[in-house]
Length: 116
Image (cartoon, rainbow, N blue to C red; front, side, top):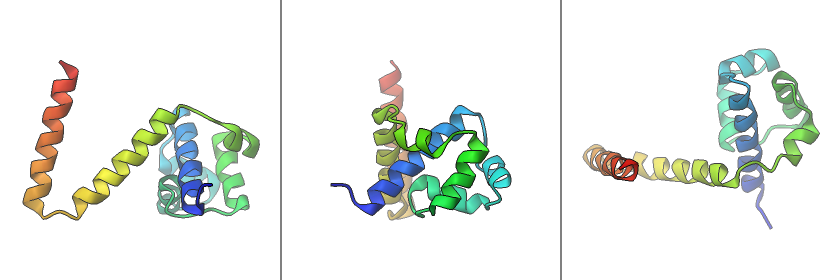
């Protein structure tokens, strides 16, 4: 069974998918929904759990129904990739600056190798 935090993360990833699919920025969604940009970002990252009325406002701004949001299965690999990237970024932020720079260089090299 999933935890409330996992549910929040899943909802946030779904919202991000629909926002990106519509070519909207967080600022545009915030303006259209009457929320602030920081709240939209926190909801998308799963840091903040929105109320149903807040979700409805966001869905209205994205021109989707709550049912579409909750029924959307999407590409789980994208969701898993986003969560993995967030976890990695959180770990890197805890490193001393020099170590973080080294990790960034390693990642850049790995990406380049993957493109070959």
